[in-house]
Length: 174
Image 1 (tube, rainbow, N blue to C red):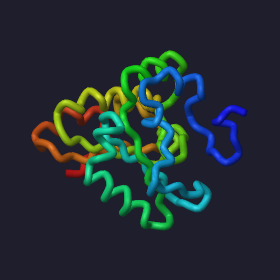
Image 2 (cartoon, rainbow, N blue to C red):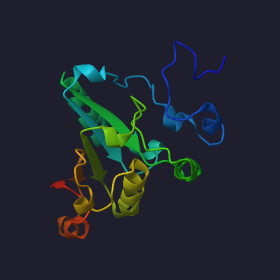
Image 3 (cartoon, rainbow, N blue to C red):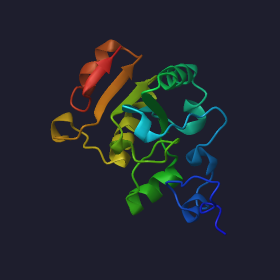
Image 4 (tube, rainbow, N blue to C red):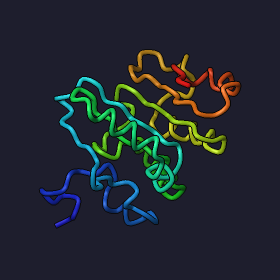
């Protein structure tokens, strides 16, 4: 029996075939100790909290851990983590048109209510484009039309650089 099809395992966004092609598949399956999985029918708000860097960098960020715990302490909110995939999975996701997904539910980011992107340093700026493209969300805010996902930027770097991102974000929080 395929390990993804086992009844005691939840369904993953990536097939076993894809997971075997990437260098570190554990980055993408979630299910870590202390991860929070809620019933989507029991929550009013689903929040995708994105650290636009690979899993190993983002998961160790204390600010993300604090916000993740805080949001998930509210019964009506489900906060999921999202990270930039490494180049091996990025290529596969683009070729096979697999949308970027939250680690906890393994569901596409574009199906959530909010996408929050934390910007810790300038080297992550280009990863924002990767996140939006892989999430299948239009890059420009004006092109999003009736998409109900609200894109927010959790801004911790120079406030004067905010003007450079006014075309793609919906809200900024400094």
